Length: 329
Image 1 (cartoon, rainbow, N blue to C red):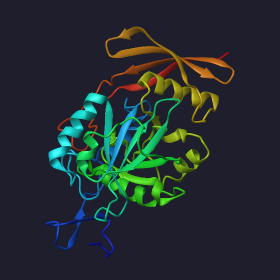
Image 2 (image 1 turned 90 degrees about the horizontal axis):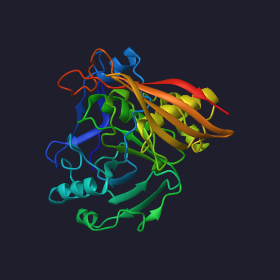
Image 3 (image 1 turned 60 degrees about the vertical axis):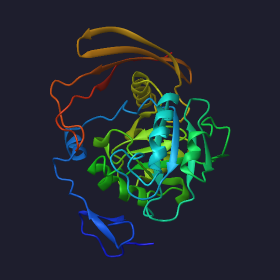
């Protein structure tokens, strides 16, 4: 197995070692510096909010796949290419999100060919790990938690998908390497999570909590989850929940000081009349510790577009979320 042992220059990744032809000596692939034009730097400078930006997926398939990933990770990796498109099609049909995962700093190490089914649905929040003999097994095995060994600890997946966005590589790989989880087995690098401008990004499974712009080694995120709480300053939202609910929960948590993972479950969601073409408004009712908490949230399209990812061909507009009112018993 090859490895890179020389100290990297600041602009290189010391743990990104890929052979030129799969058999030759490993080389360190340089990555551009995070200059002001990079999406994550620009987002920090603008003060972009990551609130209510977690994706809608509730069911996940994690596939351990060491080695390099192309932009379309499952289709452009060492996963069996004759099988990859069929797995992707099945995932679309069943509403399952596929993530490739690998151990930090061990991309070319032997793999146990693990895979996991994860259900982040409120009240379920479980993950089951299995080992495949061939990639083709994933075409027929049930994705429902009926097979595999239940996981008993949170899993920290750090987006390091450099082929999708440079910021994810430069910010994500050091975080994945240094994240102080209770066990190294709790930490994985993962393919594109979304919201590249919020790098470094983490999703904690099976709770489905998305974090962005995570500073340092991520110790605050780990400490919070080990205590059954969310790390509110960096919380983007909870996957599987509608975006208005993510926004309402975030505002209510901040105002009421509620950071427990199970705090403020959804009771009701309804659409309100829109005050303008680029504005949408919702009423969200959450279950608080002393009764129902009512939150009115609004999403707006910014007047001017911005570059949202390093790979984007041009600027775009992403909705921002704002709390208009909060009522407690």
